[in-house]
Structure formats: C-alpha cells, structure tokens
Image (tube, rainbow, N blue to C red):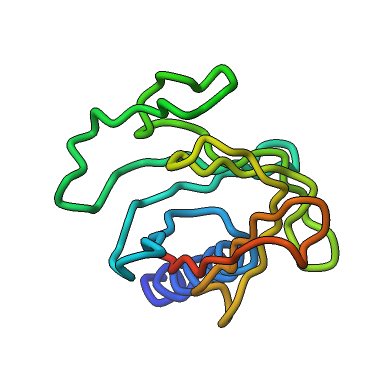
Length: 145
C-alpha cells in the first residue's frame, strides 16, 4: 500500500511539473538590460486563459520596495512598482502567448507583448514592441520555481 502511495506521489509531481513547464505560470527572474544583473522577480498567473504578470520583488541593491512609476501615464502613475501588474491580456496561440501588453516602469511606456517558452519551460522570451514584432526588444527571463 505504501509503495502505491509513493508511486502516486511521484506520478502527480511529474505531471504537475509538466503542466508548469508547459505554461508561463510561475515565478520568473528578469535581468537588467544595462547591467546584466538580476532585476526583479515577476509572477505570471493565468485567469480564464488570460495571462498577466505582477512584479513581486526587486533584486537590485537599490530596490527598497518604495519605488513608484512616476513616468506612467495610466492608472498606475504614482503606484509602487512592487505589486504592479506590468503585463496583461496575453493568450496562448500556437505556443506563443500574445495579444496583450507590457509596461516598462522605467520609462512609463506600454508596448504590445508576446512571450514564448524556451528550453522546456526553463526560460521565457519576453518581447515588447510597437506595431509589429520586428520593432521592439526582447528579454530572457529564467524560471525560479
């Protein structure tokens, strides 16, 4: 009986790992474009097939948790960056999460966004762009859990 319970636990753990690896849901580490050092922890969650991302923690030595989005022009203006939704409206289509937008809190600008899992879900390519995907920039985030 005990062997069956252990086997069931292993099978459930395996399949739950597959589910997480197959979607961008979870905790991700973003990297600062200028320094190449870890910038923040961002949690992506899904609700009714729509993915959004919230800044959970800043990782730079200067991050006190008190930084606000001074340059934002929408309802996020003056809000703390920690706890802020920076990406929303993304839906999966053919393995790419797209159709949403992403905010760059550094400049307050919002861009169209698409995300794609890499390396069996260990990395996430996040691309913000204006108009078409050709005009934008990408970051690679690494999965933390």
